[in-house]
Image 1 (cartoon, rainbow, N blue to C red):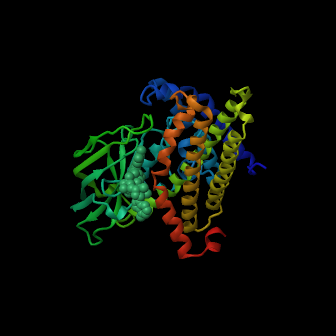
Image 2: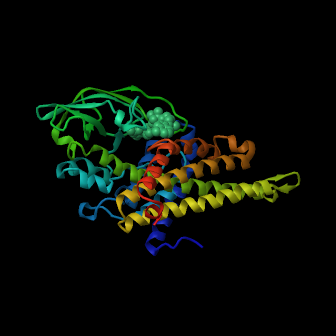
Image 3: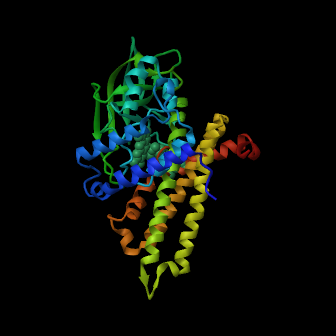
Length: 391
Ligand SMILES: Cc1cc2nc3c(=O)[nH]c(=O)nc-3n(C[C@H](O)[C@H](O)[C@H](O)COP(=O)(O)OP(=O)(O)OC[C@H]3O[C@@H](n4cnc5c(N)ncnc54)[C@H](O)[C@@H]3O)c2cc1C
């Protein structure tokens, strides 16, 4: 039985599927063969359509012109967008609801509303050379200097910095009474003292890069600090919850497309006189993939529904970790099997299975590795008990 969706949710699913299949998928191979980059007019069309569809403001409150969609609908949209390779679905930035709670009215007007309307683009800079899984090892500092801060440090893997015009940057505050606490800052991408020091290549072919930035005494006015000193980690957790859930959704979409492709291929590919779909070892791979996708989808939808029901944030946090952990590991297993079902054809870059095989790998790493998700889940059950965690 299909998961029961309201008419509105089903309409969002159809719209996102049509955008993914009709507008984005036709350009995947072109992107793959051109370092992820499409002709400017095609990218502009993708962005315009995504804005018209409302993808940049799904989570934004209606009081600020957003759609304030239920989380379940947002997950359903991202699931469909996850069917596309080469990150072509990243055609717009998104204004998250937590940003409207965290930012001042001036910051909302200057930075967050522009994300909604597509006139600005952000990147999120937390990770450093020594601080990836362990944010307590953060070394970037923001030292008070009158009504300014001086930012000093290095940030790694800053996704989309080549497209962004500002960073949301996490640093340790110094020179205040609440010294050594984390805070977030809005920093212009071209601020004096901010420079790219490396732009490494990665396993996928995306037009969004993940460069390393050096911040040398970058002057940031105190009005660019988000919230209070000490709030930084909590805001980052809000970012993580959303990103982890949407990674889970995209992984479900990717796995669904992979299974569709493998099913079609297996029925038409004849080896030793019969379609490979007749071979039970191929059937087993399909069966495991469908079963695991079903489990991941239920977990992802239910985690979204928990948020819509207003369940406690700590439990939602644990569930976002479970959904991300299971869905990303599931999608990687599915991609591996589907490449195998395609045989040599599955190793060609023109085959979406091959691209997913590379692209899905990072979903087990970014926004907290699978090991870190396991720690979050284990700590949650140890602190509470199973009945509290699972209900
Ligand atoms: C393509 C890409 C894009 C990214 N984009 C961004 C971005 O936009 N902004 C940003 O801030 N960061 C970004 N990241 C960084 C990403 O979030 C980190 O890579 C990730 O959190 C892991 O940190 P690390 O690489 O330092 O690994 P480490 O922390 O060095 O971990 C190495 C290994 O040790 C394991 N490990 C660590 N601690 C434990 C533990 N306590 N128990 C068990 N195992 C443990 C990890 O799971 C991992 O397997 C990106 C990374 C990549 C690859």
